[in-house]
Length: 531
Ligand code: FRU
Image 1 (tube, protein in one colour):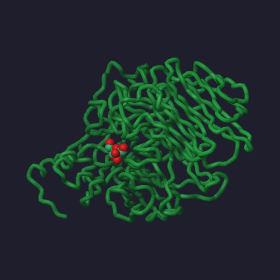
Image 2 (cartoon, protein in one colour; image 1 turned 30 degrees about the horizontal axis):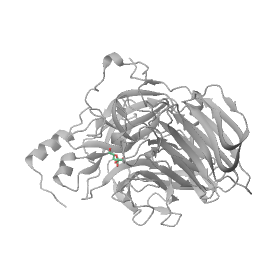
Image 3 (cartoon, protein in one colour; image 1 turned 90 degrees about the vertical axis):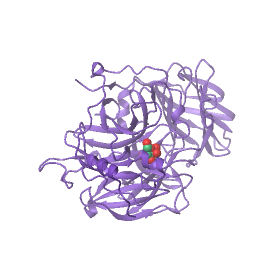
Image 4 (cartoon, protein in one colour; image 1 turned 90 degrees about the horizontal axis):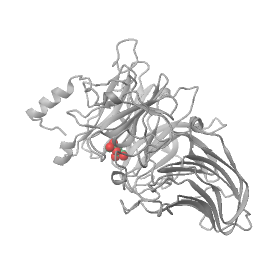
């Protein structure tokens, strides 16, 4: 549809079309190059969180010359969502992080919504001088004024490039590279190089489905296909898709995974992330499961908008993922003062053959072992009622192996993390329902949102009588991987004091802790920009 452009809009467009380097970062010079204390109440100790103010989705995750880049949706003027920028941090190991200045600022086309980044190794875009390699960010422009006016075309896709390892960015003069055809929700581009067809591929969300575009040069894009109208869940708008191949462990079988975040209507309410397993020929994605199958990446309510790192070296070979550890149901009202939100730990996504068929599982990255202190063995025991496993470990990684008599299973058993204030977080297995459950109804502050104090459940996939749990406990979150990651729960909570005490419990029968290891964890190091 042609639109009449006003003189003012022409001026704005002209300004936008110049290749203007980004503004100088707003940084407190005195605080540069320092290890940050990060010791406020509820401050995550081994999860990335912004030094101050608002953060949501991880963006532009790309690996280049020894650095994992993490950009993120950021509003530097408030702890509540507002005009979006791309915040920026880097890490050599996915565990310790260094803050860098804001990478992308809003401009006359719009605010900078979610997107991705790639290394354009062959300079197909021509954005770098000959012989150089640009890092290219592909993001959504969100024009707030257009949205307020009631326009439909206020989201478009734009690109920017950096020639200095992501430290400074220049917006492309021809932005937007994909104009909006009149669709209200048209966002979150994830781009990758598809070697088999020698083409860039972009997947992004269009209402309650995704679209796939192709390009030879990151600047000119052609619509290739659409997926999802009748597939998966449609409880909310689709957001932040990703598409990548994953090889089945110890096999030649490779599948394509499409990740899609769902604004609302998740397995346990609010926003959540689902995925599809299928095939991709460079143009079209085909789902291998029945259209109505919904596979959830995480059953906790705090793993949203996660996508994977681009350009992880082939010799590493991992598909590395990180999500936003919150939920649109309550993200803007959680009780932290200086900043809001954290990311999940980095995860290694793997394809696994389970009793229910192929599933994608997420495993904490091996680099997390760097934070381990000396392990403590937890004595094996039989539990009927309650048994104290350990006390005084607010930052902890647990590897626990439980078994029960299949002829006489306990009705309910699990773990109770608690503090001296009588607050608790419970995780367990309900044998009759064949469900894992988590309960944060009495886990500290909950009254900031009616959606928060809830019990969450997940069907157990595996049916044997041996349950392995891998758990990471931070001061305001927990990540639980059950049955070798077949079921994951990522959840936040706000106890008055950290949950240092861990008990196991068993109701209506006996459960056996056959082995248990506790690794107290050190806090990560998070620094400001080096001098
Ligand atoms: C997902 C999301 C994206 C959007 C961004 C805006 O959480 O809604 O779809 O690009 O957040 O901050």
